[in-house]
Length: 77
Image 1 (tube, rainbow, N blue to C red):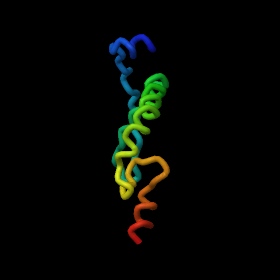
Image 2 (cartoon, helix red, strand yellow):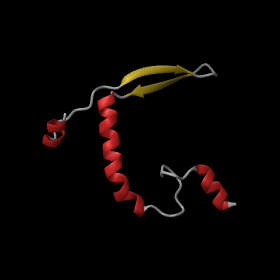
Image 3 (cartoon, rainbow, N blue to C red):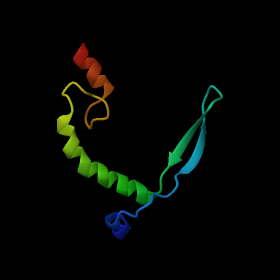
């Protein structure tokens, strides 16, 4: 796996699909990645987060660690 990542030949595995029934009768399709793909995703997040987080506005609350939509609402109030 490491060599494939270094060589640029790594191909993620297909995600496992699972259908979740909604209360209103609809369905939600859930994709479950393999453990190895999840580990690689997390490693990428850990490298890129410190690079890009400083560029976010202090007023941005979406998808930032330690910040939530509730925090944004509290700031507006």
